[in-house]
Length: 232
Image (cartoon, rainbow, N blue to C red; front, top):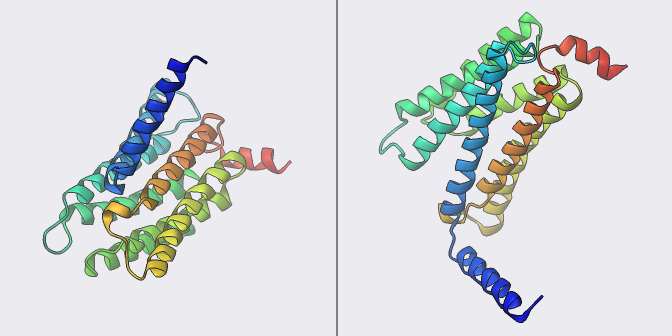
């Protein structure tokens, strides 16, 4: 490489270093948030396209699953950047209720027993109620969602099971990192230092990508058939 080429690369690395040193978590969170939203939109449009083309692997429940995820993402971004000035906002209430529907969509799509579907709705409504009466608290939304994804992993097989387990791992790792960091420094980190959100967004992107790839192989639309195939 010529001297001018080396100087050019050195200049690029120096510029990136300066940007990184002045970039707060608020900026990186916005970037990874936008990236997550873009990927969810791609999954939604892709699943819708397959559904319209009568691809048997993409049912209406699967399209609804990605639609709810995308809408929840948009609503989550809204409440993050435009927080309520007093009490819990109507948007947060809508989010909590939409999570109830998302949980049902997941267990219904996995052809779980009817009694488990009823249990899912009841437990989700309970946590949604607790979320509302306690004025928020993300744990009230994350806990039932995590439990349902664990159940979905149990009823699924192969690549789809891995995808659901990675969603669970993403939530557990994110919560663990946040709590350990807060315990270590003695207080909850301010927003501009919460880079753990970026890790969370990237893990969710990878998790949902694996779930989408599993759907392309028919692992969600035919869980009973896949169970026999993967267990053989």
